[in-house]
Image 1: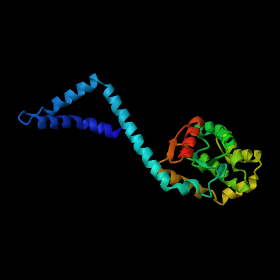
Image 2: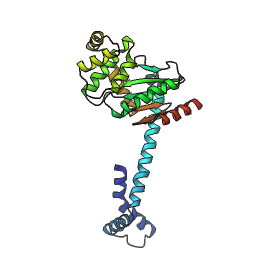
Image 3: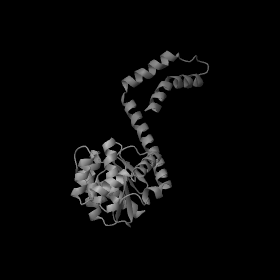
Image 4: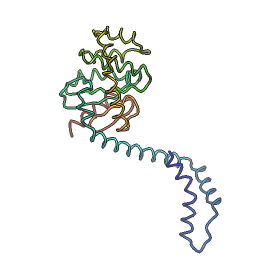
Length: 245
């Protein structure tokens, strides 16, 4: 956007320079006259601005995607092989999906049940879950509780229950949800109290910042980064592409 505005501002001067170069013997048009020509043309053809914005956006998106792919490749171990990150699906699957998510994110919640179904249907998919609470203090609290459940082997059912819950998170709520999936809430709370969980959350934030991830959910499949809502059909297509490569 800023690049396009700068280009439009510079356009009259560029026209003036071109005119002076093409006709050195002819006095260049005054800057005001050139500006009026450009102004009148853009008013008469506003679709040019739309096309320019779309072209710039496409170029910036492609550059960002390429940059993210390179960073994914250089941080593959942190993304795929961090022993502290919970894993669902097949722990030795042939295709790994990495998901950065927040328990308050409505799009994360919307994809939770379809993702569970995908893992049941495709036994070759491994899901690495990156707790990425960016939507408030109670999102952080929920992530800390979820990570504290890993020691009890209850992370995935607790994760799903937290995704299914609609409302804010406080300790009484988190304890009730945890208890409903068979978690020892006293141990969970004790593990949260000794701060076993924040280092992983902080590490996920640093990793997301390095790759350029700022939205939830964000999925990584192969070297492709997809921010925001993603349909399971699109996910299946990317899985297929990874298996072919």
